[in-house]
Image (cartoon, each protein chain N blue to C red):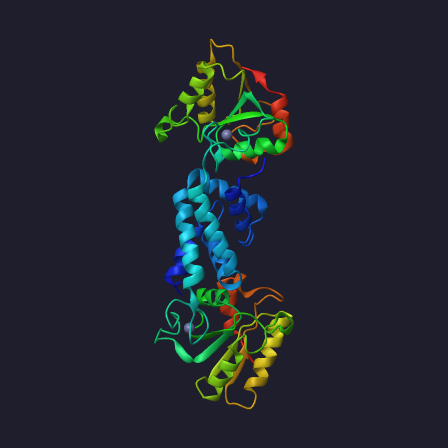
Length: 198
Length: 198
Ligand SMILES: [Zn+2]
Ligand SMILES: [Zn+2]
């Protein structure tokens, strides 16, 4: 039996969710259609709204719905200490560790010239300008331990060299080759305390 | 860190999907926002469209976008043999077994008076009328082996008694207390071949 066109399209598009294959997509579609159409309507509306309404913070490039994200808008955070991460999910993971009270700079990717991700795409020109203007005392690199993460760390290291900015990189506990967003809070807290000067 | 309102609403509403808890909902939301906004937009549109555009077949109550579903509209299917199931997902599971070539009657639930699911809510009055008009030769019960499934089978058994309709129930291979939609095709095919008169 073929699904009707609308059901098939719902199943197909559900597979754009991470970890959702054709079989669980089908189960999700049927579940909503049989038992929770109101939930499906709310989800559809929330998703459309988020895809268009969530922008980037003007200061740190993290997700934001105002000009500044909640971290950048918080006067209790130390603005002269900046942690560089690849993605908003990494910010979230670090925030959940409760160890860090500075600002962030979110690259939205890591250096990967073959994928068209150069310094400009990652906002590294903006970061360099801000360093030049003396806004930042300490830069903490929390890029991943992948090839791209290493290349990004190396690029920022070269950028900081010759300035008075203190540069460190979170170290202990971050598993090699792993994505930061799946690391538990305790491990991340440990990695922050164990950061070493580069 | 709190999520911004739109992100939080997306995470909350994603948990209406079966098997999706707060943690995977968060991972899904961030994945879409970071890497696949177009996919998220298509999913939102497909979901809204399906929630409102998928109706019920006028004949068998299965999901349909036209007056008749694809099974009822197919002249090669045996219309005088009708299999009674609880849900559209059960139809799908049986179709995938490739063993059955008759029509269906989809209850969209099973008898559960405490949940407000009586014979009328399940369309059993319509089925009884159709039986009375001599449209059906054989009725195959594929309701589940739960308390509600047994009650439903019992009700239909009483309804058929005294008529010439042949009544059977799929038997071997259906696990006790399990949901039909998770049964593999081979087991379901076996259950169809092993059906016994009630
Ligand atoms: Zn910000
Ligand atoms: Zn039908």
